[in-house]
Amino acid sequence: MAGRIDIDFNKEPLGKDAKDKPVFLKDIWPSRKEVQEIERCLVIPSVFKLVSNRISYGNKEWSNLNVPNSAENSLLYQWNPLSTFIQPPNYLQEMMTRTMSQMKNMRCLLKLEDNVTCDLISPAGSIVRASPAADYLTERGLVPRQFQSYGTRRGNSEVMARGTFSHSKLKNVMKGLTKIGPFTIHHPSGVSTTVFDASVKYKDDQVPLVVIAGSNFGRGSARDWATKGPYLLGVRAILARSFSPVFKHNMIKTGLLPIQINEETYKILSGHESFEIKLDLETETTKQVQIVINDGDLVLHGEHLLLNAYDIKLFQSGGVIRHTLNGLLK
Image (tube, rainbow, N blue to C red; front, side, top):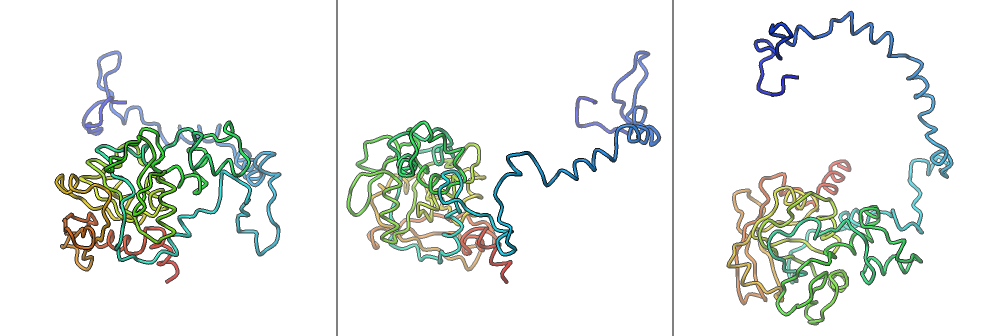
């Protein structure tokens, strides 16, 4: 009403009336009697009773949904195995079965440049043909006009994992890779393939992954799938020159380790190396991380960005969901 926020309502007027007289908030504030009169006229108990009586009905479509009646299953959602929109979330299963890895024999999934946005990490746009997500949907009997977008299928972790790092404008600058888009080189085979297909091979071989990135990694509007997606691909640490603060916090909550590296380290790493990450999480004051390259041929240094004991506990637990569930079970 005053048009600004730095006002003391007790001492300063909101404005002036037609006679140039100061008008204070207390002058226009309604009396208790006025408020009660409005309540008497407009706050009608029958309206609330009508809403309360119909709250379990909803609309026709909602009321016709098939809900199990047995006492045993009445509180459990009955997953439809044929649905391509919503399925049991894989990341929950993976988080709950994950053991704290030693971060040895790691491989690089991608090497990215500066200012990679959450949209490049986890697109929300249309699902294009000839992509891992499209192949998944095609196998389930859908045609391209039914693919829709990652935004509408974010309840299906199978689709979203396949959509991670799938943006057509993503540029993987791993040495020797010339394609622009969701491609990488699998090691040690040296085969150029899609990011998702490479991640499947690495998972089959139980090889944890890292992503190398430039400055301001994860910028833009925050998306939960921008961290859950890499986690499902097998990424366990991201080595970047700097992170978007919100993205960094979401990484830690998901169970991913943010490691800050300098420009020289970024330039040295080609993406073809094997990695071992050594860090001491016993004390909050020791932030240094050793990045052992190719079984000791080279040792680089970085700094983990777990800022306090709570961050460390979240990471060691495997993310906030597992940490919370562990606390409830205790």
